[in-house]
Length: 112
Image (cartoon, rainbow, N blue to C red; front, side):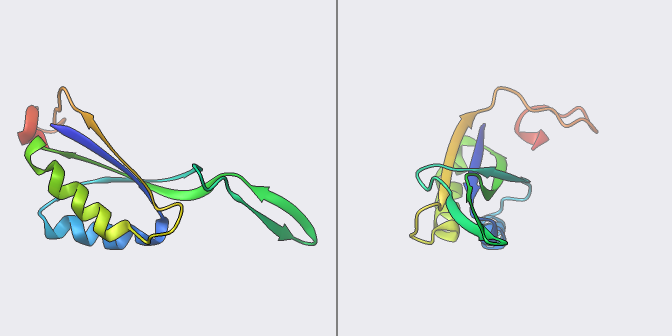
């Protein structure tokens, strides 16, 4: 099993969700986060004062999937989240050693 973590632009969330549903991904965890990479933030003017916005709003999606569907999952996220502009985000794939569904005590892939 793998945990796919995708950091994307907030306005792309619905498109990514639809793309993942289309390939049979049923569950995900979504968190509103802030961060920066090469984008390095930007400056804004508020009430006549200029200030730097270092951390930009992003959305973090976490999806636990079997190793066999990782390539399709990544492809779906890429196609749905890509704008072609800086700040589109990143996708990380992390191994998962164990999963347990609390309600039923199921273990492994059946718990997902």
